[in-house]
Length: 147
Image (tube, rainbow, N blue to C red; front, side):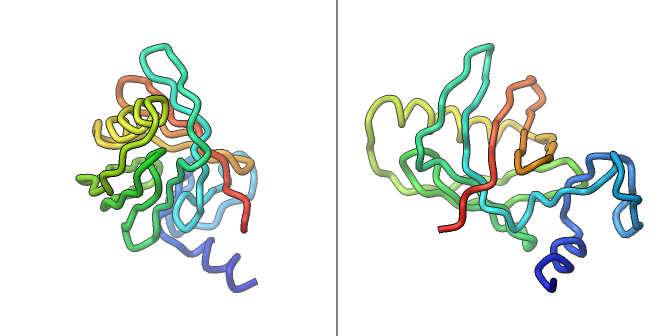
């Protein structure tokens, strides 16, 4: 119960409707879904009309305090994230410097580029999250299973 209450009170959520932050909503189409405090598994990235399947290691988490972290596909990363409603902006990414196979590195470069292209729009529903950048490229994520 307290985790549910905390998730509802977190000011950094994504509005799937038009309910302003801090106001109650009816639970209808304007229901709010939290982007922060969730471990997201990256499923794939659609960029320039091509879809890249994400390595199983690709992850993203944004905490309410603005810390973002995860795995780009090969390397772990951290960054600052600013969330305002359904808009997210990531700061400079700091990552480890391991080398992996070419497919993982290709995905990693595309994922890192996506996160740093500017303001990203988020849409969350039914355990899925889609992030869309200004060019229309999309990052597809799902809630990660608890281990």
